[in-house]
Amino acid sequence: MSEASYIQVLPHTSCLLGHVTAEKVGARESQIIEQELRASAPGKKWKIVLDLNEVTVLASMGLGMLVSLHKTCSQEGGRLVVCGLREDIVQVMKITHLDRILKVAKDREAGLKIVG
Image (tube, rainbow, N blue to C red):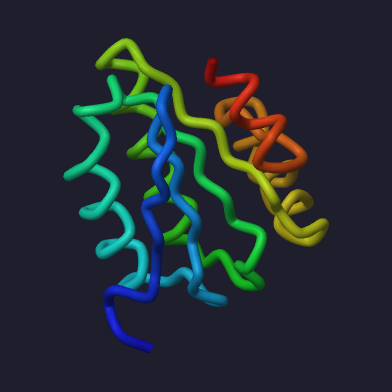
């Protein structure tokens, strides 16, 4: 898979809408996804909706990337909303208590409503 195919940054008027297209988000994918989002986020006031509906494996580096993005968004007055998670990834979020830190939405539309 080429680097460009790990994430698509989709046009949206009020926020940055990212769609992760990689099935596995590990160390390499996390770095590239985070770089792409950080490059585009300031123009959208750090309001990010990240759709993970194609992700089947979210490794520890992927979880760390989400925490890092959440922290930056919060510091910049924005918000990160993660959506489209598979049930097994939702369970990982609950076990690691990341569901208490990260805002998780059922789908893209719900994420867009939350981020405003």
